[in-house]
Length: 558
Image (cartoon, rainbow, N blue to C red; front, side, top):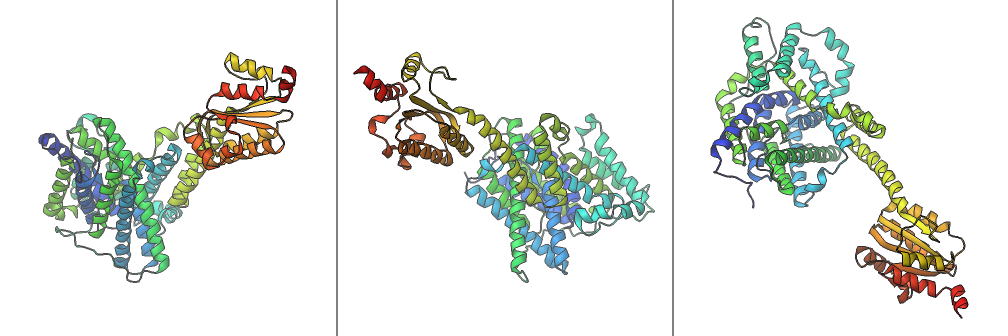
């Protein structure tokens, strides 16, 4: 089905869910638009466009999509990068919005390639470190406006290096207003939250205070923007060098991947609350279309927003109609009340954005990581450091690489225990009595080389080591009857062991069940090296045949 699940059976619940989500989205969209450097209008229209398109074409019926903290952080870095290289701010912003379009195209491609279920198959240590790092970046970038100062150039590093000057030049009243905003967000009673989201309450209280108590103070406020539909901004490649194009593609891929992770993790939350199951690939296509259209109209990039989605579901939203209602309400607010936005102080928005950054940090896991595993803690803290101080892409790549290497090492150590050579039943062996008797009859002349469980590439070294340890025997029986998976590297190590056994004159027997493992050996043409009666799926049958063909036993029987 092309469209998302839209139902008219729950109009009242969907309408109330959409209204509540719109109330929550308004201050967040304003805060993210201003924080990114693209302007409040870009944040608001991004919330409308992505919310509407993703609700129509996505794969999660209750998901609310809008500009999010992680997406805003990456987009802010893109804008800062382009404005530092291109003197004309208009051109720099146009290229930044092209990155949003590219991110949407990447997401559509991921969905069409059916990569949805693989996107979030990433170690939690890396996801936690990456998201926490983004939260730290958002907090750092809001320090200047929180103190009533203009954000310095240079992003995170520039802000950190300018921190002494920012603190010494802080504007007391703007700082006080931002602090009041933060206190409202933190300490709003739970009973009040049912009627008014803390973000909206902080926005209203902060604005009212700025117009009354702080009326005579020259507070920095949101620049005015017109109450009209956004203009279409077609892609432009004027003045785009190959290096700049490469940078745009890389940033688009990063933004697209982050949006996929953000949206699909939120979809899982929605599933758990509604006891439904989303369509990952369809959701990626919907998110991609949303970001593509948002970029074409100068809107911020976005993804599935956990806060908006949870509020929507708790208020009664059960189908994509709630997302559509939310987008339409936001659009009406922009068109009817845009002049009022210029009354909102930037310090209030800085307080809201700083609280979002603080909430993105995975405090629960960070405080327990070192108790669970020192390796996990090192990966998490390392990814945070790389994300904040070096580069988002390298943070993920290095984090995933190290986490996978450690996992492979652990899995290899466990699976290596499934590789053992057995010469007599005095060894560590669990065989039926008949097979134990046959093995004892061979008096050590027949060696049972047993493999069990999944044989990944890390086990190849163990196979070689165990095989090289073989000394005196006349026949080897390779038992693969309990192998659930035989990787390419492990199968080549097995091939090498069988060929070496044949070269030194040992009789080789093989037990392998029909299925993927046998097909792998057939493709290697390994079974062609052995007589037909030396290969079977029945271990007892092969063992009996092997024992009867031992030269020593043949002489004794004659």
